[in-house]
Length: 352
Image (cartoon, rainbow, N blue to C red; front, side):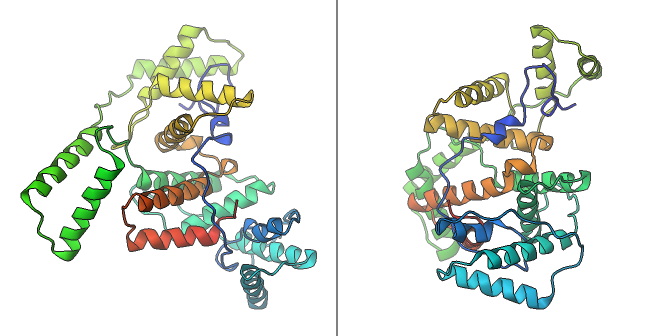
C-alpha cells in the first residue's frame, strides 16, 4: 500500500514535498569529476554558468558502447583545464556532454542490495548519473528506478542520526567526541570527573534513541485500505474520516529499526508548509530543518517516495557535506573516511 504516489483525492503525502524540499543552505562545492567515472553534464555546467553562459541540452548517445580511450582522454583533459579557469567554447561543451552521456548510457543498472549494505562509490556515481539523465528528459525503467531507490534508501539510512535531546548541546557533544577519540587513539587516561560527565552525555543520547515498539497492521485494516484504494481508482471520493483512517494504516505500516516513526503531525506539517511555500511563504530555518528531517525519514521508511527527478542523492550529499562542515566548526573532527567522502562530493557536485 502506497498512498504517496497515488493521485487520489485522499489528503496524503505526495512526492511534491520533495520537489520543493526546504533544506539547509547548500555548500559552496565545486570541481569536476573524471569523465570516465560517471557521465554527469552538471560538472561542466559549473564552469559554463560561472562564465555567464548557459549549458546546451544534453543529447543522449543511443549506444551501449563506452567512449573510445581517445575521447575519454580528451574529456579528462578538458575537465583539468576547466578546473584551472579555462572557459570551453560551445563546440567543446557539446563534445564533452556527448562523451559524458555515452559513459552514462554504457553503464549497467545497479543491483538491489540489502539495506545494511554500504553504498559504494560506483553506486553513488551511477545514481547521480541517473539524476542527470532524468533532468535531461530520460524516463527510467522499473529496474533503474528500483536500483536508484535502493541506493538512496541505503545511503539515507546509513547517515541517519536521531535528533539529540535538548539536554545535550553542540559543545557537550563535541567535548565527548574529542574525549572518546583521545582515549581510543592516544591512550589518554580521563579523570573520574571526566568519566562521569561523559557517561551522563552518553546516557542522554541513548535515551533519545529509544523508539516505541511498532504494532503490525492487522489483516482487516490492510483489506479495508486496499478496498478503499480500489474504490478511489474508480472515482470514489472518501470522507474525512476515511482519509484519516487510511493515513493511520499507512503510517502504522512504516517502520525501520533506529528510525523515528512518522505521525499525523509530521505529515500535516509537511502538507501545510508545502502549501504556504507555494503561495510565496518563506520558511524559517527551524521549519526548513524539520521539513528536511521529516522528508528523510519518509524516504527511508517508504523508499517508493524517492524519485530521481527530486535529486534525492545529490541533495543528500550536499546536506551531508554541510553538516560535516558545521560539526568541524563546532570542534568535532572528521575522520579519514569522512574527509575522503567530503572531497569526493566536492569534486562531483556543481557549484551553487
